[in-house]
Length: 269
Image (cartoon, rainbow, N blue to C red; front, side, top):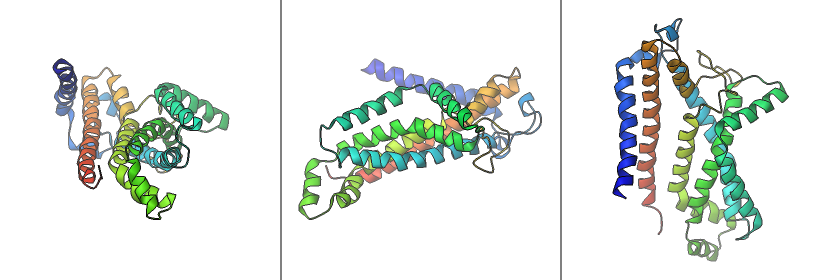
């Protein structure tokens, strides 16, 4: 047990140390406040603002759509179907399989759909792709949080005359709110860090998109393209980009833990 814990902590420390040591020298204000300029990939001026904004656009839009789809599915499975129903087993199994599909396969599938519809790479198609990527993660995590709500609490709500919908909104969601929040931020972190699925659907651009139909850059792809150059200065910027992405994900984790700790105070055990 001690060795396993040590391996996990050591891996995290090594990753953070590598990103910080190699990326910090290239980090400056221009990196996060400017879009790439002429010669950026040759080591000249500019930054990764386009990738930062693009990643936030993609992950935020996809997470919002995933919430709109995931919550009704979870409520249907936990409230509006009979316990042990085949549809519950089939839906959860399907979500588990979808969770295991590699993101590159998902991106290729969406690219086929785009070809069939004669669509171009854009922010909209990137959001749709990331939504499908986040759906099984968010749905299963919220589903597990809902299953932790005590059954007697629901019975008490029904005994007081509450309808099924009132019980769902005022009792179950309130009880499962820490788990729901964790699921949302977990899916958001997965979406903002994925590169393979959006390389086919969102494209890449050095500018910030002004509409849903413009291509969009992402931090993972910015890191990939910068590491692929033969210029050491640009490679250092790749690690600086990785540092920015790591800080964003780390910030999400800290916010999630803080909010979960606050909301857990109001949960009935």
